[in-house]
Image (cartoon, rainbow, N blue to C red; front, side, top):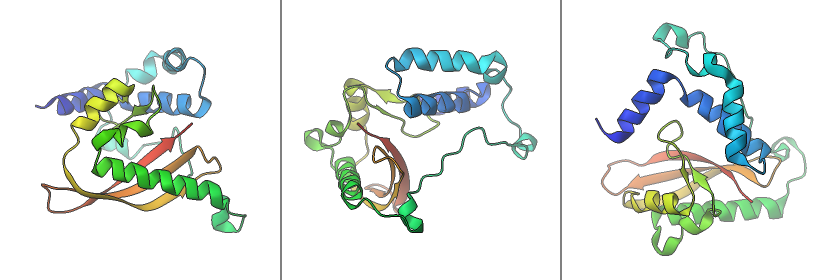
Length: 186
């Protein structure tokens, strides 16, 4: 079993992935001055009963209830004025991310991250890569790609939070696939 499979099995067995995801989302939304302390406090608030529940069975899946939902859209889609310059900057950022993903040489991808930036890749998988050293290690392990191109951008009311849907083709795979990345930027 690979390390990734072991981590996924552990998270599933102990049902902590959802709790960690909720905690990280709360931190990203509130952006406290001490994020690690706030993360710990948030997890403590969830309580032992939430974190130590047994994994969901197939029957329990039908009883799923939303604990967090985020609608990513901008009101311009329903008639409000569109912030042209803000959206152009977001589009340019998404294009730079896709280009850096496909060709991360000269730190093209790494330089898009803040000093203590994080990247959950994939979401629900191993713990996020946090800080330039960990991000650099992750980036060096990206598989060679034929291309990565932005196919859609989801804007929000904040120009600091958006999603980019990117089509990616690994060089050693026959077909491309899509990745949806959520960005929270400075």
